[in-house]
Length: 405
Image 1 (tube, rainbow, N blue to C red):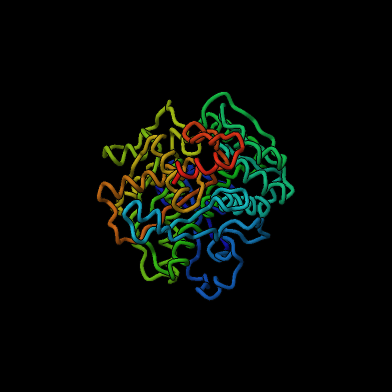
Image 2 (image 1 turned 90 degrees about the vertical axis):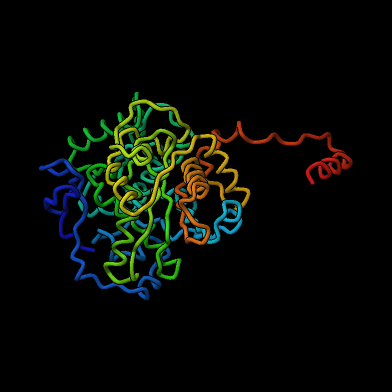
């Protein structure tokens, strides 16, 4: 879809549809502006489209060639057994662990790298805690562009394997994600022919996440859920999903888009804390959590995510790492889905919301699982049982079966 321009989310200032991401007037974030009256889309044309985010191409900001590895239209699970364990009859999961590089980042990167090609950029880059690095590297390989990834110190080696095998250049910064992001931002400002997907391409990149709203509505027969639970790092994902539901109503694909938004963050992080304590979103400079993919101390879209949650009538929860690990195990044992730690935070937050009476048993609820558990198995190992060891006699097998029954 043609982008008419960019508009500041804060002050409404207009900009041309270029690789820009910050308003010169108020330093607010920019997002695409579309000519909605010119959009022709129907449920029937969507159904005839590819089984990826590009089935919604008329609602995405790319005019040229797309880099499509097959991201999106992932498993939509009516989680009856998990719902029974939590006390919900209509719980649904969108499982983005089945994307090409096993996380939701494939949605946003597919759009951003396609846009980089459209702009004629010569390289792509990002700051990442792991999932984005792998996705960018894979899409860059298909687009025949070099990829440069800035990461914080101490990331799990397993989180970098995908990026390395696809040929990305990994640059480890001695500091946190915020330090890596700052350095990547400086590089983006110095090299205007490079597309940093979560920096100078961010307005287009974020649009890929809207498809998580589109898919929820389509899979629910073109209705919207009563409530959603969304993991929050920068806050951009939650804001994009909110925007996606509103756009469906705007183009007439759903009758109305009233959805309660609930944020899920690790314990003590800024957005959830601000919502629970009724304060402003204040950055934090130090933390201790295993959930590195959500560990952003200064969330760029945090204030906007808080506003969405509060205006929708939703809430936020910030479970502990241990709660997240137990939730991963619960999900795996009920639905056969092995999610990463961010998904554990989402399910743990969902449990808290139900236990706290904020979600009713008959409401239609969609929870978003953003990545695969095989990306961070080392976090789970200390919390799993050991194999049952025997000498190799059939009698011992019978004993084991008797004990496990």
